[in-house]
Image 1: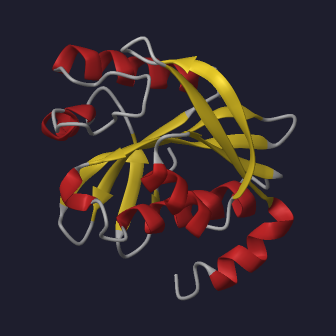
Image 2: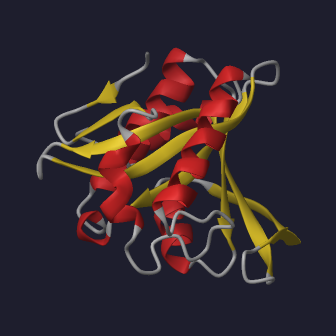
Length: 188
């Protein structure tokens, strides 16, 4: 079992035993407005968790529950996904945190732990992020991490309301990580 943590955040494996800590947060308005997933009811959240856990069995996902150590509360969920072991590429995403945790630095600490694990422990060559073109807040956050916009997949994802979103593809390469670590994450 992989646990990633620092003084601010602990990422624990998401499970059928601990996902219930997220039931209240998952009900928050517009929490995942730019996602094709639906966590708006306890049953839909359970389906979301089961889907993530199914990927664990196939070694294509590693989902986590996020615990904010400063607030001593569970804050949301995130995962490594679309893990391609041969090519040494994975995605960081499926991240949602409650509104009370947004803008607190929690997401930056969490991304640092995940990037460090991907590049320094797994020794992967590339980390990718896929973000709805309309989601300016998430795009700016990933750009602040040092990720490069590599392109936009036009109208590639069908949303729950029938809208076809375009997806921005960002990436960080292994050889870029040392500079990003020392400039963006200085003091982590």
